[in-house]
Image (cartoon, rainbow, N blue to C red; front, top):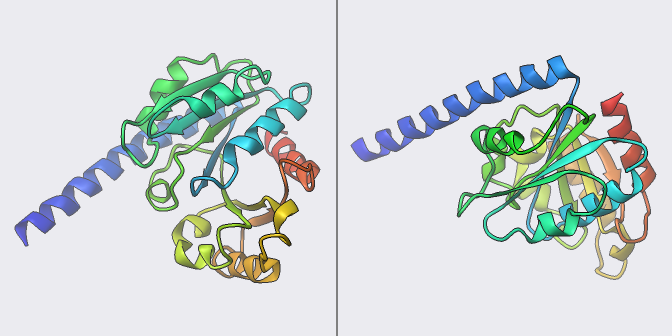
Length: 219
């Protein structure tokens, strides 16, 4: 019992410090007019593919910087290099989420002044990132058509806290037998306030609606 109480106290202390730093980030972002997007999802949902196309298509429309979080390797950051945006890699070394301290260190390596938007590609995980505020303007959760229609019901917290939910890989929905109506219904059940978007980074379906959402945030 004593050990259990200690674990809870440590967890609360860590989250408390994170919340304090996230609040400082948010104040800094608001004062500078920088919009910050925290993108969360399971591994393989298409976060990096979405960012690749977004950076390429919006390079002349929106000044974006990217922070990429991964457990190991800088593969995703290298994929985004040369797309017209500064990119900073954060390797968490086993942590299943980014926290406000990691974001602070990443921002030291990037000149934020010219940017209109900072996109944070969080570590692929639908549990840990839900608890960590990064000071973001908006949180976006991705779910691909290959993950199962009940994914929002299994991980409701991260969907409940999202400002937008994006269904990805819709170009293969029919091929994989995805029940799109059930997926939409489950998202809306747990995240009724979230904007719902559907797109394919590969085919381009739905991408303009995504771009309008980003440009609306940056306006």
